[in-house]
Length: 378
Image (cartoon, rainbow, N blue to C red):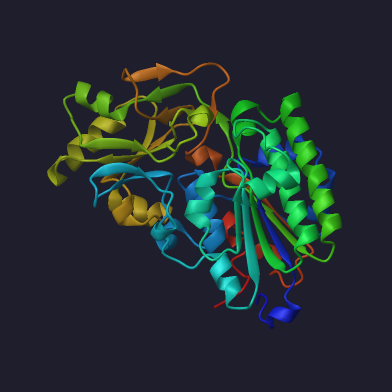
């Protein structure tokens, strides 16, 4: 199973991780190129992994495995070596080979193009070309013009044009991984005209990419969906007010792109002051309106396939309308139109394979990380 021939006969592969493209966005917009690929190739509605945040899923797609194996459990975590909440943005934290490293063993050269610079530091191990549209090098600006702002839909168009440029100019690149930004999905629901414009233009550019590399395999999926959220809870403040103080509560979604989601998210890591507090804190958490599930570290590691020593003593999941984060008060009512992810309600994403000659049958694909795990086997 998978491509096991020599590098001279490897099929060129383009992996497209369309950030935030839940199945509702896929269903709502025509996207004739992508849906032609789905009709003639493989289409599967699949599940993302928890927490439904970019880093855990992006690395999963890149490594072809659960977070329990690759170790990237979210966008933020408590680093016990420093005792501080840290962003999970270093490739040193990824415990399995990236697909780029697997491809190297077959003599395949790789490129990673992304809207967000954090993806380069997290997933750039083993690539020959790495570029973030958020901070492109002068060579890229000279070739394509100034990149639009990171908080725009236009940056995704610029990114796809960069991918098409690589396909046209650099045929020696046999594996190209492209990661867009979900700012448009945070900003507009699936039915909005702006959302239709964004996905229609991305689809048109997919057609240009196909024309630039007609013999290539195109593998497409997403990291999570998106939903309206109505409130945010500061679990530290909520527990303190109930006489149940903790060490820290961390939103697993928190990253540096605060205009996307203000650092809030539907999953939280709760770290205790002492192990014997576990039952008391769990009971207090379950009494908070908006908290849907509370799991111990062991339960969450087993149920959600997470690396146990990188999550909280307790893992808290919000209901469909609730997120967690650091606030001035215990609860914040979110503005109308606020859209976010991180919970169990953003698991449904599409998966499409076009012209993938050695791909397994459609029933192989159950999760987004199945997208390319069959490629370049050890």
